[in-house]
Image (spheres, one colour):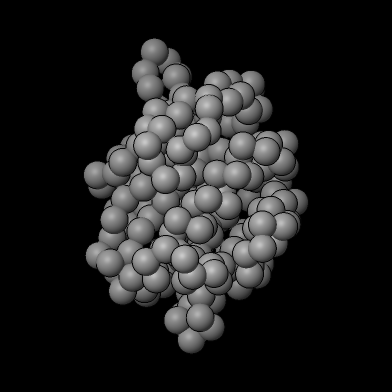
Length: 206
């Protein structure tokens, strides 16, 4: 299994806690993953030249230009991977090409509260041997823009909502983990384990 070379792209200027990106970085580095953190969106043009094989998105708002979305899509289709965390689906919310790449778009959430996350596919490599867990977080509601394989879910309004999923994009992978509004949820040991596993899994075929 290759050692992941991960880059975290964070946008701290919106509603999520900017300290969350530091928790993600610490989580990956503590797991022995080579990871860097940047707020420079132009990094999407340098991913291949810098040897990055997994890009984590902790972004929100109109982050990417249409050209940068095209660059990201081409990079993933060439065999690399994106791991979207929480508000990644609330990024470029009017851009269908971005939503198609990520697989879904944020359409709403309730208050921050304590809820149960179900391991809905215990055979998925990211979720195997994990058990259902509780977390204090925002529960994101999503509109699907592509087919994806759900491995984590939670209940809201009488419906099961995807909380973790994977989709293919060309030769690459896109993984989305909905937990992560602030350091409370990102410090949850199971959430940290999921992020670490997602990065390792995303880098497997690179």
